[in-house]
Length: 621
Ligand SMILES: Nc1ncnc2c1ncn2[C@@H]1O[C@H](COP(=O)(O)OP(=O)(O)O)[C@@H](O)[C@H]1O
Ligand SMILES: [Mg+2]
Image 1 (cartoon, rainbow, N blue to C red):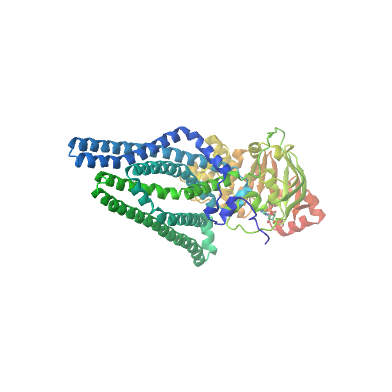
Image 2 (tube, protein in one colour):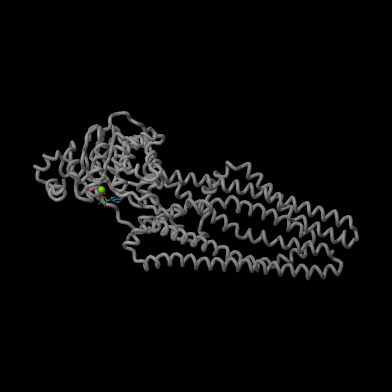
Protein backbone atom coordinates (compact mmCIF):
# COMPACT_ATOMS: atom_id res chain seq x y z
CA UNK A 1 0.00 0.00 0.00
CA UNK A 2 2.51 2.65 1.07
CA UNK A 3 1.29 6.08 2.07
CA UNK A 4 -0.84 6.37 -1.04
CA UNK A 5 -1.35 9.63 -2.82
CA UNK A 6 -2.56 11.35 0.35
CA UNK A 7 0.71 12.91 1.32
CA UNK A 8 0.98 16.03 3.38
CA UNK A 9 -0.70 17.53 0.28
CA UNK A 10 -2.96 20.51 -0.10
CA UNK A 11 -6.10 21.46 1.66
CA UNK A 12 -8.35 20.06 -0.97
CA UNK A 13 -6.84 16.63 -0.60
CA UNK A 14 -7.69 16.69 3.06
CA UNK A 15 -11.13 18.02 2.30
CA UNK A 16 -11.56 15.25 -0.19
CA UNK A 17 -11.45 12.87 2.73
CA UNK A 18 -14.42 14.63 4.27
CA UNK A 19 -12.75 16.47 7.09
CA UNK A 20 -14.42 19.17 9.07
CA UNK A 21 -14.62 22.70 7.81
CA UNK A 22 -13.51 23.97 11.19
CA UNK A 23 -10.00 22.78 10.37
CA UNK A 24 -9.82 25.01 7.39
CA UNK A 25 -7.19 27.62 8.05
CA UNK A 26 -7.88 31.10 6.84
CA UNK A 27 -5.39 31.57 4.19
CA UNK A 28 -4.17 34.94 3.13
CA UNK A 29 -3.47 33.98 -0.46
CA UNK A 30 -6.96 32.58 -0.91
CA UNK A 31 -8.39 35.81 0.39
CA UNK A 32 -6.33 37.90 -1.94
CA UNK A 33 -7.34 35.71 -4.82
CA UNK A 34 -11.02 35.84 -3.93
CA UNK A 35 -10.84 39.62 -3.72
CA UNK A 36 -9.30 39.64 -7.16
CA UNK A 37 -12.55 38.23 -8.49
CA UNK A 38 -14.47 41.07 -6.84
CA UNK A 39 -12.47 43.76 -8.59
CA UNK A 40 -14.61 44.13 -11.70
CA UNK A 41 -17.64 44.73 -9.47
CA UNK A 42 -16.17 47.50 -7.32
CA UNK A 43 -18.80 50.09 -8.26
CA UNK A 44 -21.70 47.72 -7.66
CA UNK A 45 -20.23 46.60 -4.35
CA UNK A 46 -20.06 50.21 -3.11
CA UNK A 47 -23.72 50.78 -4.03
CA UNK A 48 -24.60 47.46 -2.42
CA UNK A 49 -22.93 48.31 0.89
CA UNK A 50 -24.59 51.74 0.84
CA UNK A 51 -27.98 50.07 0.46
CA UNK A 52 -27.25 47.62 3.25
CA UNK A 53 -26.33 50.47 5.60
CA UNK A 54 -29.42 52.42 4.61
CA UNK A 55 -31.61 49.35 5.15
CA UNK A 56 -30.16 48.77 8.63
CA UNK A 57 -30.73 52.39 9.64
CA UNK A 58 -34.26 52.30 8.29
CA UNK A 59 -35.14 49.27 10.39
CA UNK A 60 -33.92 50.80 13.66
CA UNK A 61 -35.87 54.04 13.26
CA UNK A 62 -39.50 52.82 13.61
CA UNK A 63 -39.34 51.56 17.24
CA UNK A 64 -37.91 54.96 18.23
CA UNK A 65 -40.75 56.71 16.43
CA UNK A 66 -43.28 54.41 18.13
CA UNK A 67 -41.93 55.61 21.44
CA UNK A 68 -42.70 59.23 20.51
CA UNK A 69 -46.12 58.30 19.12
CA UNK A 70 -47.06 56.69 22.44
CA UNK A 71 -45.40 59.10 24.86
CA UNK A 72 -46.00 62.43 23.17
CA UNK A 73 -48.89 61.60 20.87
CA UNK A 74 -51.17 59.09 22.57
CA UNK A 75 -50.34 59.81 26.21
CA UNK A 76 -49.81 63.51 25.56
CA UNK A 77 -53.09 63.70 23.64
CA UNK A 78 -51.51 65.29 20.55
CA UNK A 79 -53.22 64.00 17.40
CA UNK A 80 -50.96 66.01 15.08
CA UNK A 81 -47.89 64.22 16.37
CA UNK A 82 -49.59 60.81 16.01
CA UNK A 83 -50.54 61.50 12.39
CA UNK A 84 -47.23 63.09 11.42
CA UNK A 85 -45.06 60.38 12.96
CA UNK A 86 -47.24 57.57 11.53
CA UNK A 87 -46.79 59.11 8.11
CA UNK A 88 -43.03 59.21 8.64
CA UNK A 89 -43.05 55.52 9.68
CA UNK A 90 -45.00 54.74 6.51
CA UNK A 91 -42.51 56.74 4.43
CA UNK A 92 -39.59 54.89 6.01
CA UNK A 93 -41.27 51.58 5.23
CA UNK A 94 -41.52 52.52 1.56
CA UNK A 95 -37.91 53.72 1.48
CA UNK A 96 -36.83 50.49 3.14
CA UNK A 97 -38.69 48.43 0.54
CA UNK A 98 -37.02 50.33 -2.28
CA UNK A 99 -33.55 50.02 -0.77
CA UNK A 100 -34.09 46.31 -0.33
CA UNK A 101 -34.92 45.99 -4.04
CA UNK A 102 -31.81 47.92 -5.05
CA UNK A 103 -29.74 45.84 -2.63
CA UNK A 104 -30.99 42.62 -4.19
CA UNK A 105 -30.32 43.94 -7.68
CA UNK A 106 -26.74 44.70 -6.70
CA UNK A 107 -26.17 41.38 -4.95
CA UNK A 108 -27.49 39.32 -7.82
CA UNK A 109 -25.48 41.36 -10.32
CA UNK A 110 -22.33 40.67 -8.30
CA UNK A 111 -23.20 37.08 -7.46
CA UNK A 112 -24.30 35.92 -10.88
CA UNK A 113 -21.46 37.83 -12.50
CA UNK A 114 -19.04 35.99 -10.28
CA UNK A 115 -20.64 32.64 -11.06
CA UNK A 116 -20.30 33.42 -14.75
CA UNK A 117 -16.65 34.42 -14.40
CA UNK A 118 -15.71 31.33 -12.42
CA UNK A 119 -17.69 28.93 -14.62
CA UNK A 120 -16.24 30.10 -17.88
CA UNK A 121 -12.77 30.05 -16.39
CA UNK A 122 -13.15 26.50 -15.05
CA UNK A 123 -14.68 25.34 -18.33
CA UNK A 124 -11.84 26.78 -20.39
CA UNK A 125 -9.26 25.40 -18.03
CA UNK A 126 -10.72 21.90 -17.96
CA UNK A 127 -11.09 21.92 -21.74
CA UNK A 128 -7.36 22.57 -22.01
CA UNK A 129 -6.54 19.51 -19.92
CA UNK A 130 -4.78 16.62 -21.64
CA UNK A 131 -6.66 13.41 -22.39
CA UNK A 132 -4.92 11.76 -19.46
CA UNK A 133 -6.94 13.99 -17.13
CA UNK A 134 -10.24 12.85 -18.61
CA UNK A 135 -9.26 9.21 -18.42
CA UNK A 136 -9.02 9.70 -14.65
CA UNK A 137 -11.52 12.31 -13.51
CA UNK A 138 -15.12 11.30 -12.94
CA UNK A 139 -17.34 13.41 -15.16
CA UNK A 140 -20.09 13.77 -12.58
CA UNK A 141 -17.73 15.09 -9.93
CA UNK A 142 -16.16 17.47 -12.38
CA UNK A 143 -19.56 18.78 -13.37
CA UNK A 144 -20.52 19.31 -9.75
CA UNK A 145 -17.42 21.46 -9.31
CA UNK A 146 -18.58 23.70 -12.09
CA UNK A 147 -22.15 23.74 -10.79
CA UNK A 148 -22.49 23.65 -7.03
CA UNK A 149 -19.06 24.68 -5.83
CA UNK A 150 -19.10 27.73 -8.00
CA UNK A 151 -22.42 28.67 -6.45
CA UNK A 152 -21.04 28.09 -2.97
CA UNK A 153 -18.14 30.36 -3.78
CA UNK A 154 -20.47 33.05 -4.98
CA UNK A 155 -22.23 33.09 -1.62
CA UNK A 156 -19.09 34.46 -0.03
CA UNK A 157 -19.75 37.63 -1.88
CA UNK A 158 -23.46 38.13 -1.62
CA UNK A 159 -24.87 36.52 1.51
CA UNK A 160 -21.72 36.67 3.58
CA UNK A 161 -20.79 40.17 2.58
CA UNK A 162 -24.29 41.48 3.19
CA UNK A 163 -24.61 39.47 6.41
CA UNK A 164 -21.47 40.81 7.94
CA UNK A 165 -21.95 44.41 6.89
CA UNK A 166 -25.65 44.70 7.64
CA UNK A 167 -25.55 42.72 10.88
CA UNK A 168 -22.64 44.61 12.35
CA UNK A 169 -24.28 47.93 11.49
CA UNK A 170 -27.64 46.83 12.78
CA UNK A 171 -26.16 45.49 15.97
CA UNK A 172 -24.35 48.75 16.67
CA UNK A 173 -27.43 50.87 15.92
CA UNK A 174 -29.86 48.68 17.85
CA UNK A 175 -27.63 48.24 20.87
CA UNK A 176 -26.77 51.95 20.84
CA UNK A 177 -30.43 52.96 20.76
CA UNK A 178 -31.28 50.50 23.54
CA UNK A 179 -28.51 51.73 25.79
CA UNK A 180 -29.66 55.31 25.32
CA UNK A 181 -33.22 54.30 26.21
CA UNK A 182 -32.30 52.29 29.31
CA UNK A 183 -28.85 50.90 29.87
CA UNK A 184 -30.02 48.88 32.87
CA UNK A 185 -32.66 46.99 30.93
CA UNK A 186 -30.32 46.54 28.00
CA UNK A 187 -27.69 44.95 30.22
CA UNK A 188 -30.30 42.76 31.87
CA UNK A 189 -31.54 41.43 28.58
CA UNK A 190 -28.03 40.77 27.35
CA UNK A 191 -27.35 38.58 30.38
CA UNK A 192 -29.41 35.91 28.66
CA UNK A 193 -27.16 35.95 25.64
CA UNK A 194 -24.64 33.26 26.68
CA UNK A 195 -27.48 30.77 27.15
CA UNK A 196 -28.00 31.05 23.47
CA UNK A 197 -24.51 31.81 22.30
CA UNK A 198 -22.91 28.59 23.38
CA UNK A 199 -25.31 26.14 21.72
CA UNK A 200 -25.28 28.38 18.65
CA UNK A 201 -21.53 28.04 18.25
CA UNK A 202 -21.52 24.31 18.77
CA UNK A 203 -24.42 23.85 16.36
CA UNK A 204 -22.88 26.07 13.74
CA UNK A 205 -19.68 24.08 13.69
CA UNK A 206 -21.49 20.79 13.57
CA UNK A 207 -23.75 22.02 10.80
CA UNK A 208 -20.83 23.03 8.64
CA UNK A 209 -19.29 19.58 8.88
CA UNK A 210 -22.61 17.95 8.08
CA UNK A 211 -23.18 20.22 5.11
CA UNK A 212 -19.81 19.34 3.67
CA UNK A 213 -20.56 15.63 3.99
CA UNK A 214 -23.93 16.18 2.39
CA UNK A 215 -22.24 17.86 -0.57
CA UNK A 216 -19.91 14.91 -0.93
CA UNK A 217 -22.71 12.37 -0.86
CA UNK A 218 -24.62 14.40 -3.42
CA UNK A 219 -21.61 14.56 -5.71
CA UNK A 220 -21.12 10.78 -5.38
CA UNK A 221 -24.74 10.19 -6.17
CA UNK A 222 -24.73 12.35 -9.27
CA UNK A 223 -21.45 10.84 -10.43
CA UNK A 224 -22.89 7.35 -10.31
CA UNK A 225 -26.04 8.49 -12.10
CA UNK A 226 -24.18 10.32 -14.87
CA UNK A 227 -22.24 7.16 -15.50
CA UNK A 228 -25.15 4.75 -15.49
CA UNK A 229 -27.64 6.89 -17.34
CA UNK A 230 -25.45 7.37 -20.40
CA UNK A 231 -26.36 5.08 -23.28
CA UNK A 232 -23.26 2.90 -23.01
CA UNK A 233 -23.42 2.80 -19.21
CA UNK A 234 -27.07 1.81 -19.24
CA UNK A 235 -26.35 -0.86 -21.82
CA UNK A 236 -23.59 -2.33 -19.71
CA UNK A 237 -25.83 -2.45 -16.65
CA UNK A 238 -28.58 -4.15 -18.68
CA UNK A 239 -26.31 -6.75 -20.17
CA UNK A 240 -24.08 -7.51 -17.21
CA UNK A 241 -25.63 -5.69 -14.34
CA UNK A 242 -27.03 -7.27 -11.28
CA UNK A 243 -29.98 -4.95 -10.67
CA UNK A 244 -30.05 -5.79 -6.99
CA UNK A 245 -26.42 -4.74 -6.55
CA UNK A 246 -26.98 -1.58 -8.55
CA UNK A 247 -29.91 -0.79 -6.33
CA UNK A 248 -27.90 -1.40 -3.18
CA UNK A 249 -25.00 0.75 -4.29
CA UNK A 250 -27.27 3.62 -5.22
CA UNK A 251 -29.50 3.19 -2.17
CA UNK A 252 -26.43 3.41 0.04
CA UNK A 253 -25.49 6.79 -1.38
CA UNK A 254 -29.05 8.10 -1.37
CA UNK A 255 -29.43 6.73 2.17
CA UNK A 256 -26.37 8.72 3.23
CA UNK A 257 -27.97 11.86 1.89
CA UNK A 258 -31.19 11.02 3.75
CA UNK A 259 -29.53 10.44 7.12
CA UNK A 260 -27.40 13.54 6.92
CA UNK A 261 -30.27 15.70 5.76
CA UNK A 262 -32.36 14.62 8.75
CA UNK A 263 -29.47 15.52 11.05
CA UNK A 264 -29.06 18.86 9.35
CA UNK A 265 -32.76 19.62 9.63
CA UNK A 266 -32.80 18.76 13.34
CA UNK A 267 -29.70 20.79 14.06
CA UNK A 268 -31.10 23.75 12.24
CA UNK A 269 -34.37 23.54 14.09
CA UNK A 270 -32.63 23.19 17.43
CA UNK A 271 -30.71 26.31 16.58
CA UNK A 272 -33.84 28.23 15.65
CA UNK A 273 -35.75 27.05 18.70
CA UNK A 274 -33.04 28.11 21.11
CA UNK A 275 -32.88 31.50 19.41
CA UNK A 276 -36.63 32.05 19.55
CA UNK A 277 -36.72 30.88 23.15
CA UNK A 278 -33.98 33.22 24.33
CA UNK A 279 -35.52 36.13 22.44
CA UNK A 280 -38.93 35.39 23.98
CA UNK A 281 -37.43 35.19 27.47
CA UNK A 282 -35.64 38.48 26.96
CA UNK A 283 -38.86 40.09 25.76
CA UNK A 284 -40.66 38.82 28.86
CA UNK A 285 -37.90 40.36 30.90
CA UNK A 286 -38.22 43.73 29.20
CA UNK A 287 -41.97 43.82 29.66
CA UNK A 288 -41.72 42.54 33.23
CA UNK A 289 -38.90 44.67 34.56
CA UNK A 290 -39.70 47.58 32.20
CA UNK A 291 -43.40 47.47 33.09
CA UNK A 292 -42.61 47.71 36.80
CA UNK A 293 -40.28 50.65 36.14
CA UNK A 294 -42.97 52.32 34.03
CA UNK A 295 -45.42 52.06 36.94
CA UNK A 296 -42.81 53.64 39.18
CA UNK A 297 -42.36 56.37 36.60
CA UNK A 298 -38.68 55.54 35.94
CA UNK A 299 -39.38 54.70 32.31
CA UNK A 300 -42.12 55.89 30.00
CA UNK A 301 -44.56 53.44 28.39
CA UNK A 302 -43.16 54.38 25.00
CA UNK A 303 -39.63 53.52 26.12
CA UNK A 304 -40.69 50.03 27.19
CA UNK A 305 -42.42 49.45 23.84
CA UNK A 306 -39.42 50.75 21.94
CA UNK A 307 -37.06 48.53 23.95
CA UNK A 308 -39.17 45.47 23.22
CA UNK A 309 -39.27 46.37 19.53
CA UNK A 310 -35.53 46.88 19.36
CA UNK A 311 -34.82 43.70 21.31
CA UNK A 312 -36.59 41.70 18.63
CA UNK A 313 -34.06 43.10 16.19
CA UNK A 314 -31.06 42.40 18.37
CA UNK A 315 -31.04 38.62 18.32
CA UNK A 316 -31.34 38.20 14.55
CA UNK A 317 -28.03 39.92 13.76
CA UNK A 318 -26.40 38.23 16.74
CA UNK A 319 -27.33 34.75 15.50
CA UNK A 320 -26.11 35.45 12.06
CA UNK A 321 -22.86 36.88 13.29
CA UNK A 322 -22.14 33.83 15.43
CA UNK A 323 -22.13 31.81 12.25
CA UNK A 324 -20.32 34.25 10.04
CA UNK A 325 -17.03 32.53 10.57
CA UNK A 326 -18.53 29.23 9.48
CA UNK A 327 -20.23 30.84 6.49
CA UNK A 328 -17.01 32.47 5.39
CA UNK A 329 -15.20 29.17 5.83
CA UNK A 330 -17.67 27.19 3.75
CA UNK A 331 -17.54 29.85 1.09
CA UNK A 332 -13.75 29.72 1.11
CA UNK A 333 -13.78 25.95 0.92
CA UNK A 334 -15.94 26.20 -2.18
CA UNK A 335 -13.55 28.73 -3.62
CA UNK A 336 -10.72 26.43 -2.77
CA UNK A 337 -12.37 23.48 -4.51
CA UNK A 338 -12.74 25.65 -7.60
CA UNK A 339 -9.19 26.97 -7.34
CA UNK A 340 -8.00 23.40 -6.94
CA UNK A 341 -9.27 22.65 -10.41
CA UNK A 342 -7.97 25.93 -11.80
CA UNK A 343 -4.53 25.31 -10.32
CA UNK A 344 -4.16 21.90 -11.79
CA UNK A 345 -1.37 22.53 -14.25
CA UNK A 346 -2.11 20.93 -17.58
CA UNK A 347 0.73 18.46 -18.11
CA UNK A 348 0.92 19.52 -21.68
CA UNK A 349 1.48 23.17 -22.29
CA UNK A 350 2.58 25.12 -25.28
CA UNK A 351 6.18 26.32 -25.33
CA UNK A 352 6.69 30.07 -24.97
CA UNK A 353 8.44 30.22 -28.31
CA UNK A 354 6.14 27.74 -30.05
CA UNK A 355 6.14 27.62 -33.83
CA UNK A 356 3.96 26.27 -36.63
CA UNK A 357 6.44 24.89 -39.18
CA UNK A 358 5.56 24.83 -42.86
CA UNK A 359 7.85 21.92 -43.75
CA UNK A 360 6.46 18.77 -45.45
CA UNK A 361 4.76 16.37 -43.09
CA UNK A 362 7.27 13.78 -42.02
CA UNK A 363 6.94 11.92 -38.71
CA UNK A 364 9.99 10.78 -36.82
CA UNK A 365 10.43 9.00 -33.47
CA UNK A 366 13.91 9.08 -31.94
CA UNK A 367 14.47 6.48 -29.27
CA UNK A 368 11.09 7.25 -27.69
CA UNK A 369 10.45 5.99 -24.21
CA UNK A 370 7.10 6.40 -22.54
CA UNK A 371 5.38 5.62 -19.26
CA UNK A 372 1.74 6.53 -18.67
CA UNK A 373 1.49 9.19 -15.97
CA UNK A 374 0.21 8.28 -12.53
CA UNK A 375 -3.05 9.57 -11.13
CA UNK A 376 -1.36 12.23 -9.01
CA UNK A 377 0.42 13.68 -11.98
CA UNK A 378 -2.64 14.26 -14.11
CA UNK A 379 -5.65 14.51 -11.90
CA UNK A 380 -7.07 15.33 -8.50
CA UNK A 381 -7.69 12.67 -5.91
CA UNK A 382 -10.99 14.30 -5.08
CA UNK A 383 -12.24 13.98 -8.64
CA UNK A 384 -11.68 10.27 -8.82
CA UNK A 385 -13.84 7.46 -7.58
CA UNK A 386 -11.15 5.67 -5.65
CA UNK A 387 -8.25 7.76 -4.51
CA UNK A 388 -6.48 4.61 -3.48
CA UNK A 389 -2.83 3.83 -3.67
CA UNK A 390 -1.57 2.93 -7.05
CA UNK A 391 1.48 1.11 -8.18
CA UNK A 392 3.84 2.97 -10.46
CA UNK A 393 3.07 2.41 -14.12
CA UNK A 394 5.44 0.31 -16.10
CA UNK A 395 7.23 1.59 -19.16
CA UNK A 396 5.01 1.11 -22.21
CA UNK A 397 7.42 2.17 -24.98
CA UNK A 398 11.05 1.16 -24.68
CA UNK A 399 13.06 2.97 -27.30
CA UNK A 400 10.97 3.33 -30.45
CA UNK A 401 12.66 4.84 -33.52
CA UNK A 402 11.31 5.22 -37.04
CA UNK A 403 10.82 7.78 -39.73
CA UNK A 404 7.89 8.19 -42.10
CA UNK A 405 8.67 10.35 -45.13
CA UNK A 406 6.04 12.85 -46.28
CA UNK A 407 3.31 11.10 -48.27
CA UNK A 408 4.40 7.63 -47.23
CA UNK A 409 2.44 4.98 -45.38
CA UNK A 410 3.67 3.15 -42.34
CA UNK A 411 1.82 0.24 -40.81
CA UNK A 412 2.02 -0.86 -37.20
CA UNK A 413 1.19 -4.47 -36.41
CA UNK A 414 1.58 -6.60 -33.35
CA UNK A 415 -0.41 -8.32 -30.70
CA UNK A 416 -2.81 -6.36 -28.56
CA UNK A 417 -1.30 -4.33 -25.74
CA UNK A 418 2.04 -3.97 -27.51
CA UNK A 419 1.90 -0.18 -27.56
CA UNK A 420 0.64 0.68 -31.05
CA UNK A 421 -2.13 3.04 -29.97
CA UNK A 422 0.24 4.68 -27.52
CA UNK A 423 2.69 5.40 -30.34
CA UNK A 424 -0.01 7.18 -32.32
CA UNK A 425 -1.07 9.26 -29.29
CA UNK A 426 2.41 10.70 -29.03
CA UNK A 427 2.27 12.12 -32.57
CA UNK A 428 -0.45 14.67 -31.75
CA UNK A 429 1.13 15.17 -28.32
CA UNK A 430 -1.81 13.79 -26.38
CA UNK A 431 0.94 12.73 -24.00
CA UNK A 432 4.54 13.85 -23.70
CA UNK A 433 7.34 11.33 -24.10
CA UNK A 434 9.33 10.38 -21.02
CA UNK A 435 12.47 9.92 -23.10
CA UNK A 436 13.66 10.62 -26.64
CA UNK A 437 11.65 12.85 -28.95
CA UNK A 438 8.84 12.91 -31.47
CA UNK A 439 9.23 15.16 -34.49
CA UNK A 440 6.56 16.24 -36.93
CA UNK A 441 7.74 18.07 -40.05
CA UNK A 442 11.25 18.07 -38.61
CA UNK A 443 10.25 19.92 -35.43
CA UNK A 444 9.89 18.43 -31.97
CA UNK A 445 6.15 18.30 -31.13
CA UNK A 446 6.91 20.09 -27.88
CA UNK A 447 7.99 23.09 -29.97
CA UNK A 448 4.77 23.18 -31.98
CA UNK A 449 1.81 25.45 -31.43
CA UNK A 450 -0.73 22.93 -30.16
CA UNK A 451 -3.44 24.19 -32.50
CA UNK A 452 -1.08 23.98 -35.48
CA UNK A 453 -0.09 20.45 -34.56
CA UNK A 454 -3.69 19.35 -34.17
CA UNK A 455 -4.47 20.84 -37.59
CA UNK A 456 -1.63 18.81 -39.06
CA UNK A 457 -2.74 15.42 -37.69
CA UNK A 458 -6.13 13.70 -38.04
CA UNK A 459 -7.31 10.51 -36.37
CA UNK A 460 -9.91 7.87 -37.04
CA UNK A 461 -10.13 5.39 -34.20
CA UNK A 462 -12.18 2.32 -33.47
CA UNK A 463 -14.84 4.14 -31.52
CA UNK A 464 -15.23 7.48 -33.24
CA UNK A 465 -17.34 9.84 -31.18
CA UNK A 466 -20.19 11.97 -32.53
CA UNK A 467 -21.64 14.87 -30.57
CA UNK A 468 -25.35 14.87 -29.94
CA UNK A 469 -26.01 17.19 -32.84
CA UNK A 470 -26.86 17.14 -36.55
CA UNK A 471 -24.64 15.38 -39.07
CA UNK A 472 -23.85 18.75 -40.62
CA UNK A 473 -22.78 20.18 -37.26
CA UNK A 474 -20.63 17.12 -36.51
CA UNK A 475 -18.91 17.43 -39.86
CA UNK A 476 -18.34 21.18 -39.79
CA UNK A 477 -16.82 20.75 -36.34
CA UNK A 478 -13.74 19.63 -38.25
CA UNK A 479 -13.84 22.68 -40.48
CA UNK A 480 -16.12 25.54 -39.46
CA UNK A 481 -17.61 27.35 -42.42
CA UNK A 482 -17.47 24.41 -44.83
CA UNK A 483 -20.17 24.77 -47.51
CA UNK A 484 -22.87 22.18 -48.10
CA UNK A 485 -21.30 20.97 -51.35
CA UNK A 486 -18.04 20.38 -49.49
CA UNK A 487 -19.93 18.32 -46.93
CA UNK A 488 -21.49 16.22 -49.66
CA UNK A 489 -18.13 15.75 -51.37
CA UNK A 490 -16.64 14.45 -48.12
CA UNK A 491 -19.64 12.18 -47.51
CA UNK A 492 -19.38 10.93 -51.09
CA UNK A 493 -15.67 10.13 -50.71
CA UNK A 494 -16.33 8.38 -47.40
CA UNK A 495 -18.97 6.14 -49.05
CA UNK A 496 -21.69 7.40 -46.75
CA UNK A 497 -23.54 9.96 -48.91
CA UNK A 498 -26.27 7.48 -49.91
CA UNK A 499 -27.02 6.72 -46.30
CA UNK A 500 -27.27 10.39 -45.35
CA UNK A 501 -29.51 11.06 -48.33
CA UNK A 502 -31.85 8.29 -47.22
CA UNK A 503 -32.27 9.73 -43.73
CA UNK A 504 -35.51 11.66 -43.19
CA UNK A 505 -33.73 14.90 -42.31
CA UNK A 506 -30.61 14.34 -44.40
CA UNK A 507 -27.71 16.45 -43.18
CA UNK A 508 -29.90 17.77 -40.38
CA UNK A 509 -30.46 14.36 -38.79
CA UNK A 510 -29.38 14.39 -35.17
CA UNK A 511 -26.85 11.70 -34.30
CA UNK A 512 -24.83 10.86 -31.19
CA UNK A 513 -25.89 9.94 -27.68
CA UNK A 514 -29.63 10.17 -28.02
CA UNK A 515 -29.95 10.84 -31.71
CA UNK A 516 -30.27 8.55 -34.69
CA UNK A 517 -28.44 5.31 -33.97
CA UNK A 518 -25.77 4.80 -36.57
CA UNK A 519 -24.34 1.34 -37.00
CA UNK A 520 -20.64 0.84 -36.29
CA UNK A 521 -19.71 0.98 -39.96
CA UNK A 522 -21.87 4.03 -40.65
CA UNK A 523 -20.40 5.92 -37.75
CA UNK A 524 -16.93 4.97 -38.87
CA UNK A 525 -17.53 6.28 -42.38
CA UNK A 526 -19.01 9.47 -40.99
CA UNK A 527 -15.87 9.87 -38.92
CA UNK A 528 -13.83 9.41 -42.08
CA UNK A 529 -15.92 12.05 -43.83
CA UNK A 530 -15.13 14.36 -40.94
CA UNK A 531 -11.44 13.59 -41.35
CA UNK A 532 -11.62 14.22 -45.10
CA UNK A 533 -13.23 17.56 -44.45
CA UNK A 534 -10.49 18.49 -42.01
CA UNK A 535 -8.03 17.23 -44.60
CA UNK A 536 -4.94 16.97 -42.39
CA UNK A 537 -1.60 16.22 -44.05
CA UNK A 538 -0.99 13.39 -41.57
CA UNK A 539 -3.61 10.74 -40.90
CA UNK A 540 -3.63 8.12 -38.19
CA UNK A 541 -5.98 5.18 -38.60
CA UNK A 542 -6.19 3.07 -35.48
CA UNK A 543 -8.01 -0.17 -36.23
CA UNK A 544 -10.61 1.91 -38.03
CA UNK A 545 -12.03 -1.20 -39.64
CA UNK A 546 -11.96 -3.50 -36.66
CA UNK A 547 -15.22 -5.05 -35.53
CA UNK A 548 -17.00 -4.32 -38.77
CA UNK A 549 -18.76 -6.93 -40.86
CA UNK A 550 -17.09 -7.58 -44.16
CA UNK A 551 -19.57 -5.54 -46.18
CA UNK A 552 -19.14 -2.36 -44.11
CA UNK A 553 -15.47 -3.15 -43.95
CA UNK A 554 -15.18 -3.02 -47.72
CA UNK A 555 -16.98 0.33 -47.80
CA UNK A 556 -14.92 1.73 -44.93
CA UNK A 557 -11.74 0.46 -46.53
CA UNK A 558 -12.54 2.30 -49.72
CA UNK A 559 -13.19 5.44 -47.68
CA UNK A 560 -9.92 4.96 -45.85
CA UNK A 561 -7.99 4.57 -49.09
CA UNK A 562 -9.33 7.99 -50.05
CA UNK A 563 -8.30 9.39 -46.70
CA UNK A 564 -4.76 8.15 -47.15
CA UNK A 565 -4.29 9.43 -50.69
CA UNK A 566 -1.35 11.85 -50.88
CA UNK A 567 -1.01 11.93 -47.13
CA UNK A 568 1.52 10.79 -44.60
CA UNK A 569 -0.30 7.84 -43.05
CA UNK A 570 0.21 5.74 -39.98
CA UNK A 571 -2.07 2.77 -39.98
CA UNK A 572 -2.87 0.18 -37.39
CA UNK A 573 -4.95 -2.40 -39.20
CA UNK A 574 -5.63 -6.04 -39.51
CA UNK A 575 -6.41 -5.71 -43.22
CA UNK A 576 -3.77 -7.38 -45.26
CA UNK A 577 -4.25 -5.13 -48.27
CA UNK A 578 -3.52 -1.97 -46.31
CA UNK A 579 -0.48 -3.48 -44.75
CA UNK A 580 0.81 -5.07 -47.95
CA UNK A 581 0.88 -1.68 -49.69
CA UNK A 582 2.55 0.13 -46.82
CA UNK A 583 5.99 1.60 -47.49
CA UNK A 584 7.23 0.10 -44.26
CA UNK A 585 5.81 -2.18 -41.63
CA UNK A 586 6.82 -2.12 -37.97
CA UNK A 587 6.09 -5.12 -35.80
CA UNK A 588 5.57 -3.89 -32.25
CA UNK A 589 5.67 -6.16 -29.24
CA UNK A 590 6.11 -5.36 -25.57
CA UNK A 591 6.86 -1.72 -26.34
CA UNK A 592 9.66 -2.49 -28.75
CA UNK A 593 10.00 -2.78 -32.49
CA UNK A 594 10.88 -6.40 -33.01
CA UNK A 595 10.85 -6.40 -36.81
CA UNK A 596 10.68 -3.89 -39.63
CA UNK A 597 10.55 -4.03 -43.40
CA UNK A 598 8.17 -4.57 -46.30
CA UNK A 599 5.52 -7.24 -46.40
CA UNK A 600 7.62 -9.61 -48.51
CA UNK A 601 10.77 -9.07 -46.48
CA UNK A 602 8.95 -9.73 -43.24
CA UNK A 603 7.19 -12.82 -44.51
CA UNK A 604 10.51 -14.26 -45.55
CA UNK A 605 12.17 -13.37 -42.26
CA UNK A 606 9.94 -15.89 -40.54
CA UNK A 607 9.52 -14.02 -37.23
CA UNK A 608 6.56 -12.60 -35.31
CA UNK A 609 5.17 -11.06 -38.50
CA UNK A 610 4.96 -14.37 -40.28
CA UNK A 611 3.38 -15.84 -37.20
CA UNK A 612 0.79 -13.04 -36.96
CA UNK A 613 0.21 -13.32 -40.67
CA UNK A 614 -0.64 -16.96 -40.36
CA UNK A 615 -2.85 -16.38 -37.35
CA UNK A 616 -4.61 -13.13 -38.23
CA UNK A 617 -4.38 -12.34 -41.87
CA UNK A 618 -4.18 -15.56 -43.80
CA UNK A 619 -7.85 -16.42 -43.54
CA UNK A 620 -8.93 -12.95 -44.63
CA UNK A 621 -9.21 -11.54 -48.19
N1 LIG B 1 -4.30 5.48 -20.14
C1 LIG B 1 -3.46 4.47 -19.81
N2 LIG B 1 -2.89 4.46 -18.58
C2 LIG B 1 -2.05 3.47 -18.24
N3 LIG B 1 -1.69 2.46 -19.05
C3 LIG B 1 -2.23 2.40 -20.28
C4 LIG B 1 -3.15 3.41 -20.73
N4 LIG B 1 -3.51 3.10 -22.00
C5 LIG B 1 -2.86 1.96 -22.34
N5 LIG B 1 -2.09 1.54 -21.31
C6 LIG B 1 -1.20 0.35 -21.30
O1 LIG B 1 -0.22 0.54 -22.30
C7 LIG B 1 0.06 -0.67 -22.97
C8 LIG B 1 -0.04 -0.47 -24.47
O2 LIG B 1 -1.37 -0.19 -24.81
P1 LIG B 1 -1.82 0.20 -26.30
O3 LIG B 1 -0.89 1.24 -26.81
O4 LIG B 1 -3.25 0.54 -26.26
O5 LIG B 1 -1.59 -1.17 -27.07
P2 LIG B 1 -2.13 -1.62 -28.50
O6 LIG B 1 -2.74 -0.47 -29.18
O7 LIG B 1 -0.90 -2.14 -29.19
O8 LIG B 1 -3.09 -2.72 -28.26
C9 LIG B 1 -0.90 -1.69 -22.42
O9 LIG B 1 -0.19 -2.49 -21.50
C10 LIG B 1 -1.96 -0.89 -21.72
O10 LIG B 1 -2.43 -1.57 -20.61
MG1 LIG C 1 -4.76 -0.19 -29.75
